[in-house]
Length: 240
Image 1 (cartoon, helix red, strand yellow):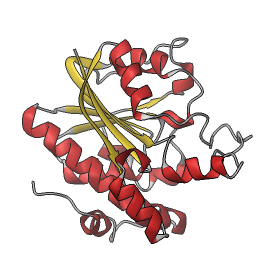
Image 2: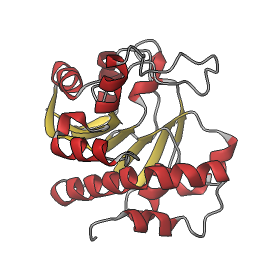
Image 3: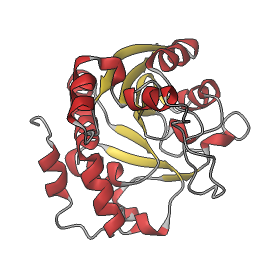
């Protein structure tokens, strides 16, 4: 499998009917989705992936299914009506209806575990439960040498620092809709690395990423020159 690019992501969905909101999401996140596909591919070249769990069934789930037809994909989280057409039930092995905020209180029940890889993308920032508790619970679903791929916004990105300098809170207010929560807590790369090591994982790869292109050219140049100012974080951790 060759390196996946943004245009490859968009091409995969050209024949899949998605709502306008989904189309906007796809265009906005195509670079991040391509990055995830390449991260999975690179990991798969070193370690076999037979079973994968994707947290938060959405467009990323369909990408994994399309680009890796030899992997058995299961999902965990909330499954909504608007995702049923995008990811029909016959495309995945199992869906676990579970709120990760309940980690440490209610056990996760799976008929397909243990998994070789868990994809935990753009989700951890939506949880109010400690990542320590969540990672401990997810670890129970992994093979002894399984891994977790985490993608999340960088709390210390340049645009957030600039907002704070101007006296403005860069983070949105907590939403009232529990089925569509905003960002309760964003993390730095050092924080996520600490959580990983505290829960018995070793860090395989850690990177600041420019998933989203800022409209201002000066911001883009600074983000390119200073990795810690970039908007996204990608962390690959392995059960050790």
